[in-house]
Image 1 (cartoon, rainbow, N blue to C red):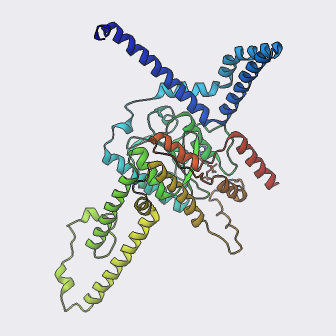
Image 2 (image 1 turned 90 degrees about the horizontal axis):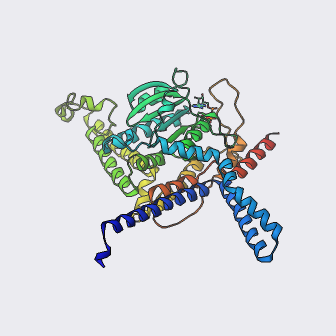
Image 3 (image 1 turned 180 degrees about the vertical axis):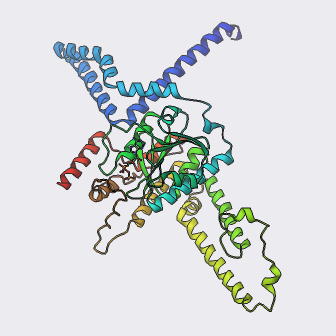
Length: 447
Ligand SMILES: Nc1ncnc2c1ncn2[C@@H]1O[C@H](COP(=O)(O)OP(=O)(O)OP(=O)(O)O)[C@@H](O)[C@H]1O
């Protein structure tokens, strides 16, 4: 047997395996494109119908129909190239721009975690204050073309800096921030908006986010100025996410950490926060606490001296504060949903964990939506800006209904597959048909 295993034969086998591998990859990506795009599904269905018609016509001897179908099939490849010209251009652009050693891939785990923390902090803050923001994280595909459209910054990401950039009225607040690695590469960047039909409640900011996510693999976070909602645009899909789940999502994208790891960290953070509260006599540490660590210690003696008549009551107060702070910490962690989630599903596959997260996010959003006594939702706050704005109330209700997560349960999947599922679960961009119909309904409703 080994006499056939010459170097030549081995080379031939390797070539054939490589050949099969490349074709397999091509088919895989082709099917992925078809699966993710309703237009391509319809076109492929059309092609299938013609093939079946040609086959049946051949069987029944219907020569004219058979010739007609054959002619269509002969011109098919050319028609496909013409029809899918934008998609083909996007794929080729993506291949050309993919950078294996992107800035984010060179970060240490610590840097990645800091990046996530700062981003989540900034987005949560901006969501509370309804400050509009558009932040794109560069992944494998270079965003340098879009960085050129903005104002270069090259500053380390911090929540304070992000909040200042997007503060309404500041020179850089208009446009997008692009993050490369741990650095804010630029602010006020311009993204090509999507040409797809979006529900009318989504304006230029969301369009820009979806646009950039269609042509690159970037992850874009949007904070709505109108509603304070946080959304994520990735792979041409837009999903609403709660601040708590944004943390998990970014942990997974940036740190490639999974649910159980996140849970472990939450426990550590909880402990650390409790310890720091205890160390501060029941008071939360201030922003500059680490600067004064050990430098500004109050004498414990003065606290315990019997001559201080307020000592006892102060001490009791601080115990109360400590207890109440701990309750706050616990409730904060509960709010994150991670502890409960992971405790109940420790061994649950990752995709299930995140499906639950999305479901929870939807529930959170429902809970946080203020309701009026008559059951109607409270009207959204008027926009800070003077410029005219589209009416959103009806549309938003519709959007919420239409973005109801699908209940799916499959086996364990690879990260990118289940990321698609998460985003599908709360997808706001509908297939072309449904987006059309929803926006038509909106328009009719407003009339
Ligand atoms: N193509 C773009 N690239 C980058 N930023 C953009 C782009 N288009 C709009 N923006 C940003 O979005 C802001 C306008 O957002 P607009 O209110 O129209 O969108 P929206 O999707 O309704 O968001 P919001 O819910 O925050 O109101 C602009 O002031 C600008 O900062």
